[in-house]
Image (cartoon, rainbow, N blue to C red; front, side, top):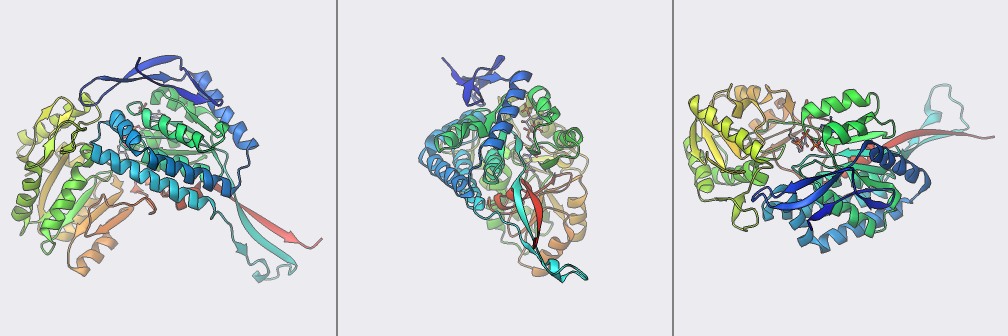
Length: 475
Ligand code: NDP
């Protein structure tokens, strides 16, 4: 019998109202049967967590202990988590290990933050004419129920970035993972429960965005929505949930600049990793590489040399750099964008072909500004090398998208680096690193249509709590 990915609510693993098949992203084998929630089950899950959150008053130290034990347990069961992430996503084992190791860090960081939730003293008596017999201070309180809606491309760590800070802050959580990748969420929830999380503080509901996702948005129960995914769905969430708080990590079109004074070998190796890990399905993946015209040939040779020697195919083979993308439909779309770019005059320096769900890591040059591979989010293993001569104009082009998540610049020139910091309208600018540079403790957020709110345990815990001002006068 296939693995059953059930719902969890009301303290029990439960069948859904219907079942769909989860297939391996590489060979199409049956991986699991996924139970999809009905509307009444979604309501029961939300209301159960709301009751649980109201009843359970875990101390900050208890929350720290639960999250720390969960981190230890994930670390101890690393191989099982890696297998599950690969089964969910088709990521290579190398990418899946990174995902699991980062989730451990996110759990540790969130647990630590549970002990650091505090308000501040307010200098009431410093106000002109204020009563002098008072104290004023703030405290931070949990919001209630956090609803976490997550994408397919980071089914464990992105989920952990929502669940762990929400629990650290004293909230309950209802989770809806992406339809493509339900298994990692189930395993994380099991591990949290084994680590002592009260059953009524968490629920997992599987099902489609337009059904289960929509019911979650229409419920009045969640006080906070933590979402990662496309800008289109993020905008829909904000419109639907009205004045309730959200954290929206959304789409991107990420660029990295390689200046004429950069260390080309170092830059090329970093760009290969940032363009092709998780088969390019990362919001900060390098999609556009702006390379100074004076060094573009040398840089392109370095880049294509590494890519041409790489292996694309079976994600469970240790040698594989690029595994499948999430579905055949996505692979077909990505290949069609490459084909149309080539018909429009672009040149394929490496890759360019598709076998089933695997798109070979592809390097393009001669890409026009109006080609899909340049002006739309590819979310696949495709990078375009675009020569520039004027750095200011290159940065104007980098800014000229609806997005503003992250950018990188490789240069030995401090002036160019600081110009980039000032000019690039991004949530993050990385000097001598790619747009994809990240550790889990950093504040992670996007400008423009890439995001609202800040991810990273310290910042997320702050957002998932409500400040309350207290004034205290002598009786
Ligand atoms: P989607 O926006 O398609 O889906 C994200 C989640 O939203 C899924 O769980 C999906 O469910 C759900 N959803 C879809 N429609 C609704 C709805 N009407 N109501 C509630 N929930 C809904 O994104 P993808 O999974 O395709 O992920 C890729 C996108 O995510 C890219 O644009 C990428 O840039 C972005 N992303 C951004 C990051 C950031 O930090 N800024 C990081 C990672 C990815 P279902 O799966 O069932 O459709």
